[in-house]
Image (tube, rainbow, N blue to C red; front, side, top):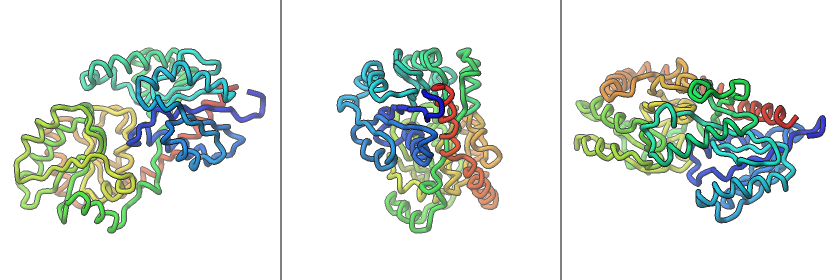
Length: 381
């Protein structure tokens, strides 16, 4: 990179899923903040799935947005293209740095590579992953730690776990906390809450919210069992609404089958992005009793919507929640006690709602983008 020039960075956004889950929120939030930066800070190019290309062009009018091959909508083809087509594209776009935002990266490129490793739970919680997925991502993370010029992680907890478990070089890891879009995730209006209630058929019932993939490490079965114990004797028990992808946790169906018939549990799947503030902000409590996260974006989004949060003090979650959330353990017995206490204490819920909303303002995509650009500039120099 010539002295005084902004680094030319190619961001590979082809791993963003259509449902805009965790990696989608990260890439979209980061690119949106980069688009607000002056072009003398970073010269941006983005390769994306064809369905996303026009969206990113609108988001990034000064960036070069390149549609990837049609075939890479399928994961095996995308991973193969990542090793062959992506390095060629980096060369064609004169990239000073290639950024891979989802664990994996090309083995050979003509420019330095930076990689985002979102968590170390494939090593810390291996029993919560299918064997094929666990084996693949363990290998990918080890390869990225060796191959990348620098690694970006979303929390100090993830950095510390990579150092402890994989002997990663701490001088090559940069922490860039995720942000939350305060325009998208906000304290909802009564109309926004009513619209979600109508769509879910909740009527006037209060509810406990969960938002996320139904993966084993999210601990959804114990959430179901804990909620059922917490509200079993209520005259008008709040429902439990599990929103998000269906995942692959077979124990969820067993836990659902145990729910007493007078209790109401809803699994609406993915909600529209525009409905998330009404869903989260309309809940009595957002409960996220995870076994461990690399960051914990769902609790940050709930906090931004002014919802009291109950989570666990595992890995990165205390970095996000701080003193502005309530904590429990992973067991259904403890979840039941702590959830019941919170549901019965309206004043505490109000206190946590305000503290959470205030704390959420500290996490911005602009701050995350600053760390990324500093990393890229350092690598390109």
